[in-house]
Image (cartoon, rainbow, N blue to C red; front, side):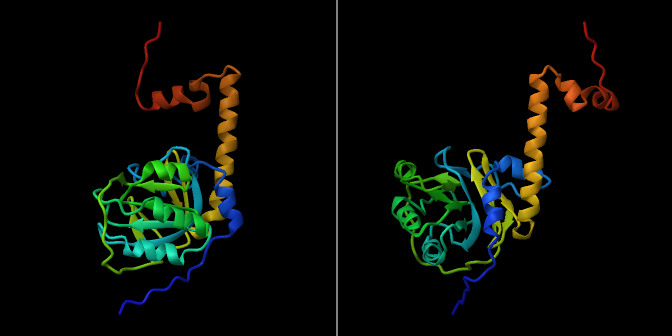
Length: 225
């Protein structure tokens, strides 16, 4: 017998809402260039966006039994994070399960395997980020861990960590760091707004980024006209 628990601590909803206001790239940079999932995991529609607590599940390749189980037990707002061994030749999730997720109010799906029915997924608007698109069906045979740490896209994701996905990719923020990363993200956005304003006011890249001294320090000499 394999016993699993679906109990885990979720982040403060206020932190999740704040992080949802920043791009995946901004959050990645703000937390020290950490947490970015492999760039192969992308939304099936670039307009899709998600941010919520990770509800983690481990699936065997070409087997979506535990994915369906996760949908049953996840709470509204949760993002189901599926680790299935970066297996591209399976369509483990499609429009039928997406409708089940939408009916429960789930926040989205991130998986390192394939999905299908992408036209219907786009029409439904339920956020789906996947490793591949594949029409090949799956079985329901293998039980496995749920609400335990999983490896996906080169990152360790724990239940309750914050998952932020948008057109550029997916980033994970540790639950206990969510508040601090939200603050750091705000600071980064403000700093970048200052750079943009300076460029529009006529300042050069060399001035803003300190390129001249940096290039000299690295031994690069540029002969100008």
